[in-house]
Length: 594
Image (cartoon, rainbow, N blue to C red; front, side, top):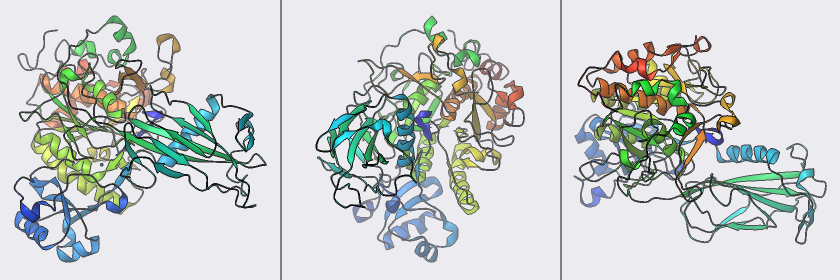
């Protein structure tokens, strides 16, 4: 998603991130050392380490008062908390240390809220000359929003006072459960020059599509609201002094929610209107591909913000294992990976909605590695990858990315991912990863795991195009790193006459809008990636014996070569589902009668 929603996961690349396995053999005091929740803040993040032997790991756990979270037990990878990097290296050895667990956010909340405020200020009719109790008149239209224009006005961050106790991921990113009443108090805000007069205060809150709080406004020092749906709520406090100099403080709150899987639901038939609205299907020749393969029973793991597995278009295709598990929530350590952001449900729908997904007969495995703010941690992503392949997923969709400007950081990120990706390769699975939404050359500025496409055939890196095949204005690119492109939406696609007034791709939405589950349009490499994952599932169903090298080569060679992509995409092309499936298909293997 880009723009109005987020990326990494800002519109969309979402960005960035557990699943706990193998704790059953632990008992007594030792078992208490094992944790199954992601860190709640950077201060709570541990070290990602790898031991040489099970004996070494067990001995270390027994001798040290630490917390342990399994990441990939087959290779003896763990996150450990309660020990410094220096102490661990001295105690065990520097080569066992892989990385300090990173807290990764799609967008820093302050930046995201400021973006929202700037955009909404331009298009929303804010009140003018509205009376404010005991503070005269607040004329938002006359506000001067320049940081260097209001040196006199210094407004402290508003107090966050939640009626019900909550656990905070960190001071900037509070997480609350749906139904929690939130009270914001800015009574301490004052003009620090005269020390007496309090500035006029105006509040505005924006919520996800469908909330009644989508444009709530309030005046005065106190403001309270009760979120009516999960997702991200952006609250902005605007303070104005007597000279119309204004300051604003953005605050973002993630609202969490979970519910059990309700089981398979009847699905509707693909309609003529669907063919028009879900126009990306025609642009990649999906209808022709379906004559050969619909991705039958291929498991696509959606490592994201979760999935609304009860959406009517998705419930049919949710993978339920022999233990009646339907995925994992790596952030909260539960078995209900419900989407409380929207990004993951949209991604799942593009890949494998039973009605309009590219692989309509594939199975969806929800793996929640991002929270209601679109952030998470690296260890959760790594553990999520391990869990997905253990469950039999052959396609892992990662519409997220992380990056660093420092070479040492990049090397550690690469090493941590590659250790887990070994298991992906051994089990014949493939990772389809978003290239990112920064309009950068990732051959030069690598993002992970997408950049690992250079290291092995296990990773397929995906850029975004508009429906005509030109690179989307926001998409990262790389003539060596980015293997293929796929429709991800673009402002150039916007056409109100066709019902596409945003330029995004239509797909499933995570929460009822207007009393029923529906769809939204989002754009980003986050969207191009599941479109590609769907095609990969079609190919695997058509020929399960293909190696990763054969699959990625066939996907690249069969793409539609487009002049705008030459030198920017390694294949020079946008995926073509029909051309990708037909050359690899074997009669009797994966064929589907429609």
